[in-house]
Length: 540
Image (tube, rainbow, N blue to C red):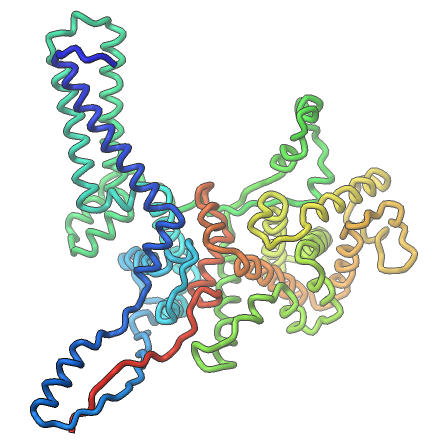
């Protein structure tokens, strides 16, 4: 704030220069990671330039001058298939997983800024993901999303290159020099002990942060990739042997929310009257009933196998690379119901999508609480419950991810009707009472509770239809597949910008499903393959 001409004033200039480096890095990274800038750079990188014709003109003039009869010819370029042998039998080793994930990141990072990819990229990804297990598939996606997060929200793209590494060394060295010179300064007695202590503390903290950033740099996947690409095996092994802090790729958790559990809540919230006065009691109550659980491995396996089976079925119908994705894009449970020959339940998938989620969620909740099965059926019941409560969580807490509709209004009307019903009928054995009161007959005992946009009656109607299915193995397989198809539908309707926002809060399981579908080529992110015409010469 004041220039005194002393030695400390010159040290101030050095620290200002260090600060300019830091804020310059941040400004450059923020600009590079902005949507328009990133999309522009990736779009340019995706352009596949056609072979130039200048050398053909030179060759034509040369051959013509030598007396040959030279005829220009149009040649159709044919893309060779990707070699699948290197990925057969789940052959990607742990050492190669990170490099594979980095390679996929370089290809698919454009999806997060809505850049179209080539069919060659799709074919490469399909071969990889059709040849590996579900565990490795989701592990590759976790690593890939880690790279995406670093690209969008950290300085990784700057730090992990020679220029960024040079700036990091300069800022660290200058800060250390300032600390040493400040400690040796002879003007200490002219300043208060408090000012000196604060200055020392700030310098030590700055150096400590630089050292911590260096440790994070060494333990990051980017460093492992760079060392692996340059065959620095010894250095890589030495770094991996150090007890460095390595954070997980993501929390591997999935949110759970139950509409009926929210309605049947017993414990009142502390200071409810005060919070109600400020009009956010409902939001706090909703968040209070959100739980998180680890994503079951069997759920990942079921989703992976479902999507892989869907891809193979589509590939059999038409020529490879030309299959139609429209049927998959609009399927939200109806195809599953038809495949299981239960067309009497098809009505529940043809209503508005928000209504369909609520209907299937309540019906699944009722069926789960009325089942006492064990074994394989129990695992399907658990999967259905997890996906049902996850989708209703997205509908209530993150409606922006879902296709636009009237979900919030329908949810409120359904809750209102349920609250009125249970206030009269009681909360003991609620699922059985719902089925007893809300039937498909014209005379409905629940008519006095009914709200115009509520789906509670429709959910009970679906529950009765599901309960009437005698083959429980078939019933729960169908319910699981319906929820997988609903999740795939939501993922297919979403875009990369929405998923990039979710990465800032720890990531969503839906993002992993969306990226898995993209790797299988089941999304609309790929250009239609067209043979490319190039010029050639026929010399006679």
